[in-house]
Image (spheres, rainbow, N blue to C red):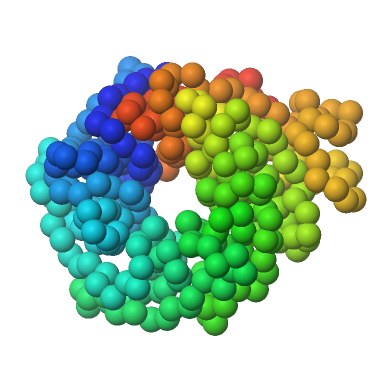
Amino acid sequence: MAVYACNASRCLAPIKSDDGQTLFMVGTQLLREANQVYLLEYEADSDSVQCISTYEHQHEVWDLAPCPHNQSKLFTCYNTGTDMKATLWEAPGGEGGSLQELLTLDSLTSAARRVLWSSDESSDTVLVTEEDSLSTWSLSAGAAQLAARSKQESTLHAKLWSATRSPHSQSDAAALAANQLSLWDLRTMKQTLTVEQAHSMPVRDVEYNPRNANILATVGDDAMLRFWDIRKLDECMMEVPAHSHAIWSVKFSPFHDRLVLTASSDTTAALWTALSQSVDSNSTENIPPSGAQTLGGWGPDKEAVDGLACRVQGHDDSVFGVAWSASDPWCFASLSNDGRVVVSAVPKSEKYKILL
């Protein structure tokens, strides 16, 4: 385990590197001081984290979205004190400096919550989560043009909190508002399926399984981790009492989808194994015909299949972010509100279960 101390933060994102480096980006939230975006590198040989670049960013950073196809470009959603904006920046080379503003999405109708890049390198569109809508934008020719917008259709009349794009289809997305989970068709900008009470308290994050287009994971203020099959949204496939307080983030491993990370206000991050929700589960015998199942609650070999792999205890404050390395399949990071970044490794026992 390696630790690096930034200033107060809640945004953490992995960076893809052409030379295989393990890189993470952190954005700070300082109310009365200038903010920064840190570029951190983890060295596995020395088990250490160093800051290789620091970029000036005037306002509090509430979301970071590095471009998956260009290491030097990133979107931030930030609080100016009067509204929440989204800007595309270019990071200078070297050890730091000021981010260069490329464009700002000026025609937003409400607060910007999250910007989501397309996984298709040939696409120049991004999906923006605003409090009252989802919108798609074209970034061609160095300018941002609104392509489509749809108002949030929640029967709860709640504000959108977050969204995610499917890595399997660029026309599919999932969004969260209050206790609700909704699936969207971005071609029509309309909701296709809705779960009004996905959690008993507000839902905070949603993630598609990167290897199974039918599986979603959600987390919320009820401290539950839930897995859903979009073909049968009347009930969740499995639920996990994952933490003792609100969960803010969930992330599937992009390399091994049985590995799932969660981050919570109980000051811990956790790594879970969920083989029954992965493509490696090549049998349907372990999946009950109906009813939400609690982790470890069914099947004679369940303890060896699904369960808690490890809990990261290196934080003293609420943990808001978790992220997998974009290059090392066994490395992940967690970020707490006090700015502490902890880089951890998948336990060898879990690694050998996957490889052997």
